[in-house]
Image (cartoon, rainbow, N blue to C red; front, side):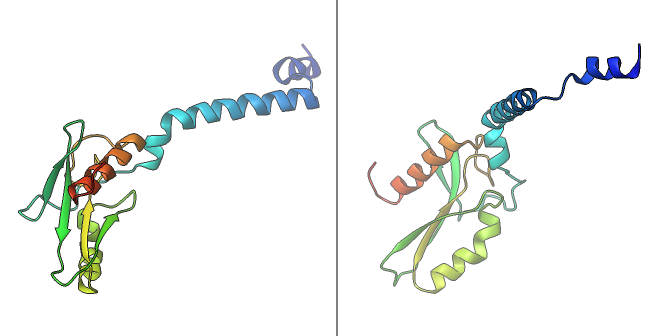
Length: 143
């Protein structure tokens, strides 16, 4: 078998139509992969940087998972800030930030998503929505 024939058999004819078709197939496969792997690509829980102490509040979600939270009250505060940390942090990482917020005159409440810190469960997009609802309701706001 000569080189040209082998090349045509393995690679095929180079045409615009073939290139577009290949692009569509590759793009579709990539989109399907990202769709099913999105939560693990977005949520990156690390080992907990803290241990549960008397300051850690355990909130129960609708699915009976316990998530960890902390409340730093400021007796002179008119407002409470519900602080939601980033996707590679937990309450231990943000403790100093929470204290600074309290020290400038606000009460502050923060929680860990499921799977972060000492919270139970696995982090997903839907779980993140439910966790913030749980924290919000704990502060006394109805659903």
